[in-house]
Image 1 (tube, rainbow, N blue to C red):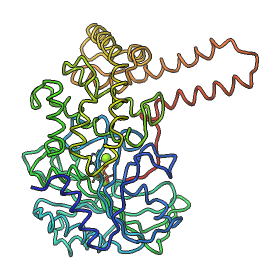
Image 2 (image 1 turned 60 degrees about the vertical axis):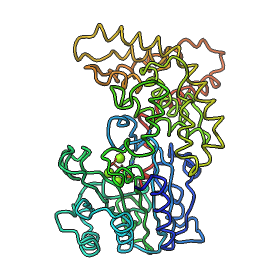
Image 3 (image 1 turned 90 degrees about the vertical axis):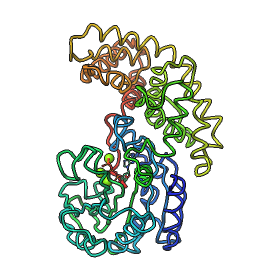
Image 4 (image 1 turned 180 degrees about the vertical axis):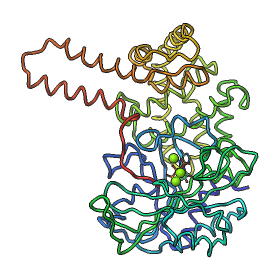
Length: 469
Ligand code: ATP
Ligand code: MG
Ligand code: MG
Ligand code: MG
């Protein structure tokens, strides 16, 4: 059986053997893009290479990239624990050509790795192409010998990639795996494509145009390749599992969560164990890359993730800080590939423990307030925005934590009401400010307050740049 660690190493070796430079993962905090909350794809560290602003001593590269998708354009947070294939933190394996090889070789390299090196049966695979990209469809037919009904033409932007409003862009082509008719879900492009039956494992981006101004495309003189394969999804398939959370890495983390909570890993708290295992990874990797829980921006996204995990641990009956006790299990699984976890271990554990100590007291009281309030609600009635706001403002409950806590009940949060309550508070603070008489200073102060107050919601509303794959 291929372990997740074997698969990562085999992927990198394969591309190294095909002339690619193995480049280390970049940090989860993008250093070259202030518009991006977290590194959300393998190409992020190569953006300037693709645009030609930067050159490297190699024209082919391969990486295992740490990625977080818990805010901005790609926000998979609400799926986590509840679908078989979404994580907040995952590893995106990729190969890149900077004006070197193009479509034919990219397809051939990917196909030979999946069906040759890793031996997946061709009958279980299908591909998508952008509807206008006849060239890609022809190549899949020729190189992979796929019949036409397993080369699905997608006309939407899902299969057309753009770096931003202007810049390199081009069609994409994805490889999907069919878990079989026992699993619910339809093929890509169908109305029930969101089910778990057909899993997207690899996205190949063919950067062949340059767009500037928007809507005006010219061919790139040296087209490039950018790809992204989800390591956890691929591992699940290679290990004969339908669910990422049944892979070696996740199973070990779930068993650790079962041990510290004393709750059956496969019992009624299964979803909680999954959330905890996922959030343990994103929390630890974010802290190792220098993000700390805070009131705004990246730190607030981290805080939301941590507090959500802590609520699930609390739900499983823990009374003492517990989250940090899971770090050694993570280091056992991933410390060799990511030594930063080992180096930052004291910081990770200390930050988790401190946050859980602070949050624990409020969590108890907030949850009992929530229970009291929902008891009085009629079936299906929304939780008033004012209550969600009180939970946020007084008990430190991020909105999504309250939403997650209401999952499985007939209630959801009146989000508009929540935002209104937030607005009212902001205005009241402004009105209550009797002032120093120095109106210039006050204007600056309130502008700053509005800005920083608003950034608490970055994770819900801000569109980050279009980086994808
Ligand atoms: P999906 O449609 O399943 O949400 P995507 O199209 O958003 O995936 P890409 O941006 O194409 O994903 O990323 C490349 C690969 O990364 C995907 O093919 C998939 O294997 C993997 N991937 C994407 N999102 C996640 C996630 N939240 N957790 C785990 N793997 C993911
Ligand atoms: Mg997605
Ligand atoms: Mg997709
Ligand atoms: Mg994709």
